Amino acid sequence: MSDHLVGIYGASGFGREVLPLVRKQLKGEGVELVFVDDGDVPAQLNGYATLGYGQFLANKAKKKSIVLAIANSAIREKLAVKCRGDGIQPLDVMADNVVVLDEVDIAEGAVLCHFVQLTSNVRIGKYFHANIYSYVAHDCIIGDYVTFAPSVRCNGNIVIEDHAYIGTGAVIKQGTPEKPLVIGKGAVVGMGAVVTKDVPPGVTVVGNPARVLEARKG
Ligand code: UDP
Image (tube, rainbow, N blue to C red; front, side):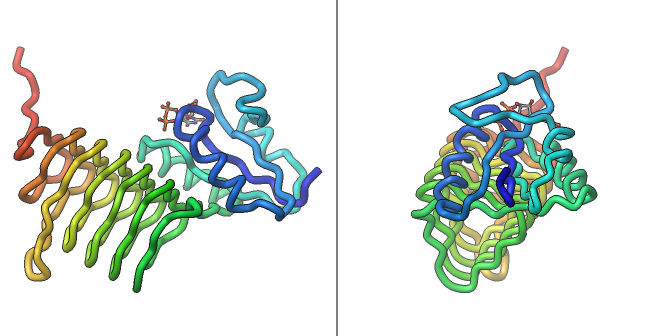
């Protein structure tokens, strides 16, 4: 039994992408890596055991850490609260070629995949996911439980509020220091969208220029 057990919570697509990052990050530290999943998953995936959360909790390792590798932000928040309550520490994950420049503040639980760049004077909230090739440029403020799919281009002076989801290849126009461009709480930016103005909380925007997707009538 290892002294330090690290659980990758979520044994689906993203979890299987995140585990190798953790393996490389903690190479040589004698940790044991497992998937943790509450669903009906095989006993092993990619050569690693999958445990239910109860089994993970019951493991007698001296230290246990968890990485929340599930893209759905509401689930991430629920699991973060549960794990905290059970005294399990979050592990921050950063791929080995992530670029982080000056004055970047990242709260707990982030997962930064390969080729992610955070430039200067950036603030990132809790449990941020930045999938491959995404960037956050200068003077941005990213809230809690924000999710970037691959290749999100978040330019300077942008505020992204809690639980927003930004789809693959979306481009967000830069704001100004006086008037940052704001993506509201829980908003969804569709893949490939070109966002040129503020997005209200809770809506979905798509297209170029991005427009609110209206609910279908009838
Ligand atoms: N899951 C879980 N506990 C929860 C909710 C989800 O273990 O409370 C697991 C679920 O069984 C699935 C994974 O998280 O294996 C989410 O997979 P999905 O393909 O939806 O997301 P992705 O990998 O793209 O983030």
